[in-house]
Image 1: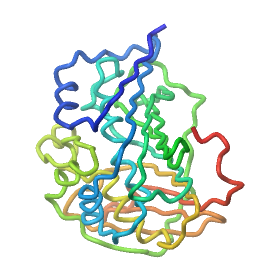
Image 2: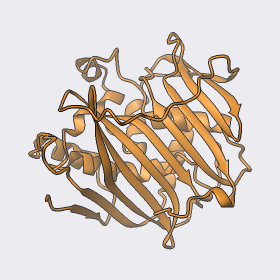
Image 3: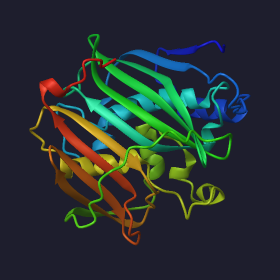
Image 4: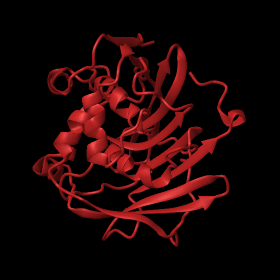
Length: 301
């Protein structure tokens, strides 16, 4: 059985150091017959960088507040996530991985002056027909209590072994006739600027030629940028209830495109889709639900 690995950080890992490890570290080659790696990353005593928060708000067009935007904790955990993905024991290269799904629980509003502890770890994986999926669970705690949790699925393209045919990914109800909530233009030239804020330094998001090498039309926006810009149209500013977000990333959203947000009430939750003009299918599908005290999971860690 492969030994578990825990990475402890006293300060935020830098993108340059992570890229160096991913490029020159001896990454393992995925073998479905071997024990899957168990890698965790931790950082304690994290305080909010007000300049980083202000830049995040500026790029996403979010008004200032004493509470963190529900998407902002991603910027805290992303440097840790990338260190896990860049580790020599990770199944494949950091530069081959894409996001495919995010499931967020925020149990209460998080104040901008709170001190936080971060914990991320590989929680599962599955073989699909066209690739490998790996789940990483991240928990943000304040004073020892969980305040935010995310399960993020990363996807590696390729054929590695017989797929897990018994796995059926969750599906979203289609809302093709939903009305437009908002439209905005996504300019070019902000990908690298946002990478320094978000911690997602994948060159696919700011290097056009690099993105084309991987079969994309050009560089495309980080999902966090699109989601951060969308939340202000979906969530009531004065609503401090716990919230659940379930996000499926279907296709890239390229810079210099018009973005369209559509939503529809679905029983006790809000279904929304984000389109790039010119693509008839949604690039991002999501569901948001505000929770009562009885709906908050008992097992939050």
